[in-house]
Image (cartoon, rainbow, N blue to C red; front, side):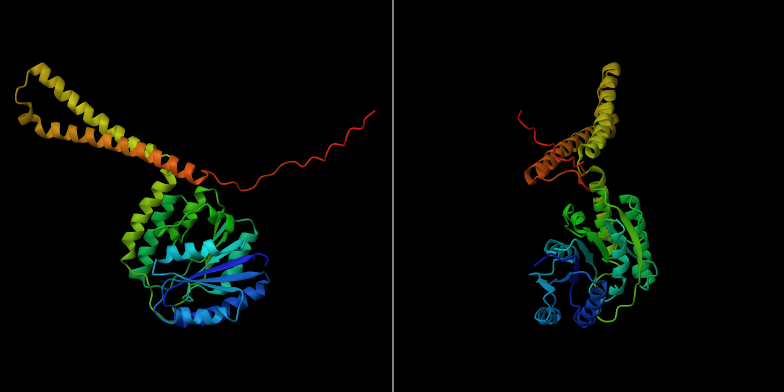
Length: 330
C-alpha cells in the first residue's frame, strides 16, 4: 500500500474514557483534510481497558495501528516508538486525554505546507492550576528558551507537527520529548509556534504534577550541554580544566618559591589550607582534561561506528544539463 501523507502519533496511559471520543473527532477532522492518513496509538502499559478499546477499533479501521509497550516506559519512550513506526511524510503528535483538540490539526498542518519543518502548539490561554502547573511551566519554558536559543513560549506540549525527515536526526531518551524543537534546531529545522486551544481534562487524572519541576531543570542542563558541546566536549571540560590546572599550579609554584626564598621550615602549618587548595585545583583540572579527552573519543566512536553525520541536509540541487549529442563518425 502507498505510504500515508499523515501519521498521527498518540501516546496514552489509562485514558479509557477519552479514547472513543478522541477517535471519533480525530477521524472526522482527518477525513475533512482529505489526505491519506494513519493513526498510531501507543499504549504505555495501561491498567484500565484502554488497550481493549483500541484493539476493538483496529478490527474496524485499517488505518489504525496500536502499539502496546511491555511496561510503563514514559511519554518520551512512547513517542519514540510511535515515531519509529510512523510512515507518513508529516507526523503529528498529540496527547490522548482530549486536552488537545483534534480540530487544531489543520492549523499546524498549514504551517508545514508553508515550508516550516516543525509547527509547535502554544497553549496561549492555559486553564491549569496556577500554583502546580502554570507558574512552574512558565519558569521552565523561560529557562528552556534561554538554554536552547529557540524562541518558543510552550516547550511542554506534545501537540506538534513535524516533517518526518526532521525526526530521523533526533534520538529520544530520558524525558527529552519536550526538547524536540531544541534538538531539531541543532540541525537547522525551521520552527514556528501555532496557538492551540487548551481545554479542561474531561476525565481521568493528570500524570504530571509539581514534582516534575526538578526533572525538567536537570533536563535543561542536559540540553544546554548537548546543544553547545555535544560534538566538542573538550571545549567545555578543557576550559574548566585549564582554569583548575592554571590556578592550582600557580598556588603551588608560589608556595615553592616562598619556601626557597624565606627558607620556611613549617610551610605546611602556616600555609596548609592554601597548599591543599592548590593541590585540589591541580588534580581537579587534570581530571577535567581527562574527561574532555574521553568525551572526544566517545563522540568520535559514536559517529564513526554508527555512520551518523554531524550535519543534516535540507535539499540538494544540481543543474540538469541536456545530454550532449552523440558524435558521428566521419
